[in-house]
Length: 337
Image: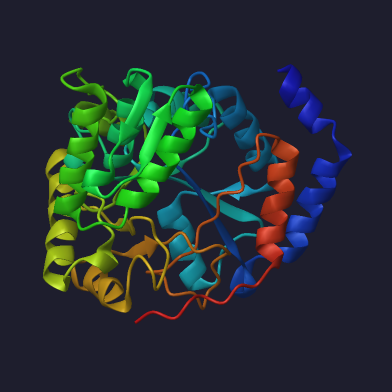
C-alpha cells in the first residue's frame, strides 16, 4: 500500500486528473483512450527487460483508475456511437493470449475492479509458441558462441553476453516479422534448430483453452486476433480472410459464444492492414476493431479502426502525463489503400 499511498499524495496526479476532464469531456465530443498491453511478468526477465512486471502493472492500474473512468471496451464503443461516453473514458486491452494475462494480470485487475479485453491468436493456444517467442527462447538457451545465419538470409550473432542476446532477439524479430507466414515459420524453425538443436522450448507461454475459459468466466471480454498472427497486408485477400475466419471460429468453439471484437496484428493502418481488411471484418460479423495507431477515438472515428496507445513508462506519473499528451495531440490516420 505504500506505493499506492505515495501516488495518491502526489498533487501532480490530481492536477492531471483535472486536466484530463477538460481535454476528454463527456457526450458527443468525448474522446476514448484505449490502452494496449501484451505481457505482465511476475518478475523481471533479463532477456526481455522492457516487459513490465506485476508491481509496475499494479502501479499503472492504480494511476489509471484514479485518473480515468475505466470501461469495458464493448460498452465504451456503444456509448461512443451514441454520444453518451463519460469524460475521462479509457479501456484496457491485451494482445496475443499469453498465460500470464490470466495468472499475473487478471488478479491485479480484479483487485481494482477493472475490466479488460483480451485479443487472442488462436493457433497458439494449448502449447503453441509465437514466432517472436520461439526466437527469444532459442536465443536465451543457445550456448555461448558466434552464429552465422547468413545462409538463411539473416545476420551473424555473437551470443557472448546478455546485452548481445537482447540485441540479437531484437534484430531477428525485425527481420522475420514481415515474411509471408509459411516462410516466417520455416525460417524461425531453422534458427531455433541452429541455436539450440533438440533442446525443447517452453510450451506454456500461451493460454490453454481452459485458461481462456477461466478468463472469460472472470468477466473479461475475449476478442479475435487472427489464427496465426500474420501481417494481413502481406497476404492475398483470400489468405487473410481464411486466417481471420479460422481464428474467430476457433475462439467461438471454445467459448460457446460470438466473438464481437478484433485486433489487427501489428496494427498499423496502411502498413499492416488495408481497407480491404476493414471491409472483411464488417462482412464477417464483427462489431468493431482496434489498431495500433496512436491517438484517441471520437464519435467520428471508424469503429473498425479504433486507435490504441501504449504509454507505459515504469513510473505511473510519467505514464499519466503521456496519456494526457496522447489525448491532446491530433494525429491524422494514414490513408488506407
